[in-house]
Amino acid sequence: PIVYLNGQFLPLDQAFVPVLDRGFVFGDGIYEVVPVYSRLAFRIEEHLHRLQHSLDGIRLDNPFSREQWIELIEELIARNDGEDQYLYLQLTRGVAKRDHAFPKEVTPTVFMMSSLLVHPPQALVETGVAAVSVVDNRWDRCDIKAISLLPNVLLRQTAVDHQAAEAVMFRDGILTEGSASNIFFVENGVIMAPPKDNHMLPGITYDLVLELADAHGMPYEIGKYDQERVRRADELWMTSSTREVLPITQLDGQPINNGKPGPLFKKMYALYQDYKA
Ligand code: PDD
Image (cartoon, rainbow, N blue to C red; front, side, top):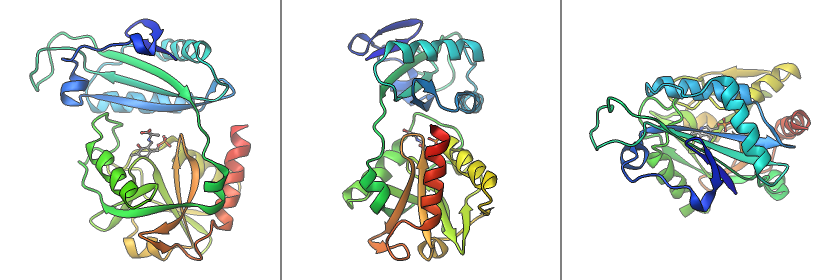
C-alpha cells in the first residue's frame, strides 16, 4: 500500500515517524476512519467536519483546507488497490522535546493510509454478534476522536476474552456506546439512541442511521437509557464506518429477545446497503 506522510506519498514500509513524535510519546493526536465505496470516499464532508471538531478539541490548527484534504484523499485512493477501501487519517502535534505543554513552534505530523475494506461477513449479519457490558471508564471528552485509545483497547480485549465482538459501555449505568462503535436498541418498534454529547463519539454511521430512519418513517427517540432497558430490548445494534450496521444478539451470554436479528434491523440494513450503492 501507498501512504501519505507529511507531504509525500510513499510505500507503507518506507514511512517512518521520529520517536519524539507527540503521538508516540503522549498519544497527542486525533484520527478519522473513512470508508471508500467504488473509489469514492463515503460521506467525506461529514468526516472532514468531525476531523475539524477533533482538532478544535485538542487545539491543533488544521494544516489543510477542505479542498486540499479532498485532493490528497482522492490521490491516496487512486494510488491504492481496491474499489472498496478504508482510509485512516491521523494528525499529531508533531515532533518536539518531551514536555507535556504544547511546543511553541511545531509542525503537525499528518499521516494517511488506505487498507482494503473487508465487509462484515454475511454470516454476522444473519446471526448477529455477541457483546459484553462494561463500565465506561473513559474521560469526559469522548466526542474527540483521539488516538489515545487505551480504555477502548482494554475494553475491546475484555470482549474478545469473552468470545464477543464488542464491549457495550455504560457510564453510571447509562448506555453510551461501544468500544469502537455506536449502539442503538429497539423497544416497541422505536429505535432508541443515546444523545450526541461529550460521552460518545458522534458517529457518521449513527447520523446516517437516524437520517435513514427519518426518511423511511421509522420512529426513533434519543435519550438516556439504563442497563436494564438495554437488556430487555427487542433488538440491539452496533454501527461504525467499517462494520456498517450489525445486530448484537447476545449480551453477557444472554440472548437479546429471541437471540435473532430483528425486523427493524433487517429493514435498516437493507436501507443502508441501498444508500451505499
Ligand atoms: N471507530 N464510537 C467509537 C468509540 C468509535 O471508535 C467509532 C468508530 C464509532 C463509530 O463512528 P463512525 O460511524 O463514524 O465510524 C463510535 C472507528 C471505525 C475505528 O476506530 O476504527
